[in-house]
Length: 278
Image (cartoon, rainbow, N blue to C red; front, side):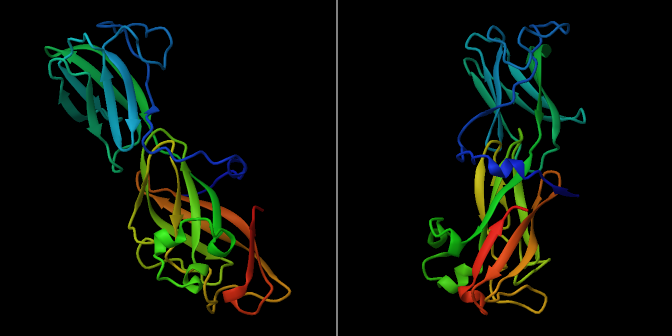
């Protein structure tokens, strides 16, 4: 499924990458042993209950428990109702975790706290990624990006001139991985099926909830003009190209369209490339 995202989000300031930050996804906590009404402040942990915090940290679901809890087991239930996993709670322990990775089923999960096999309380939380494309740019226009760190300082500027970065953000509540990066339509070297993932030196790049990262291309999309590509001209050639990223968790293909002008030369090597939002 190709999703054309709103361009409004790209006009906002990019949030600083925070892969180590906990993204709170706490749901409604029922009163201890009571399946009736939830605690006050639905959507927040119960300060007086055994489940103090349920959060996603990177690709791990973390459950934090109160210091005086008598809970001895935590179960994680998938959206389809099947058991994802069980963790025993050692005496005095206040934290258990579940590695959910990037191959999980997105949706509503239940964290169930038990004592001696009986349910004490539970929390529901949505774990769903939401990947958005925020920006795209070239080496020649963005020399401050870590190009040498990514491609190595042995690569020539000619090589880096043909590559691009794509900034993506995960505004959802679950981790995901980008498994393919594509450039199509009016680029000098459009490749609809690049070798590998199209991401430099990576088959996939994991992005945690709340994180913003740059993907670097490996398809030389803005390099030498090919038979089907758009080239440079002294007076300028105008067109539009599409950036597409494919994600792992839900298999989405997320795309954004950009206007582009190639001007000032007959050769892409020293072409002025101007990329703007439509």
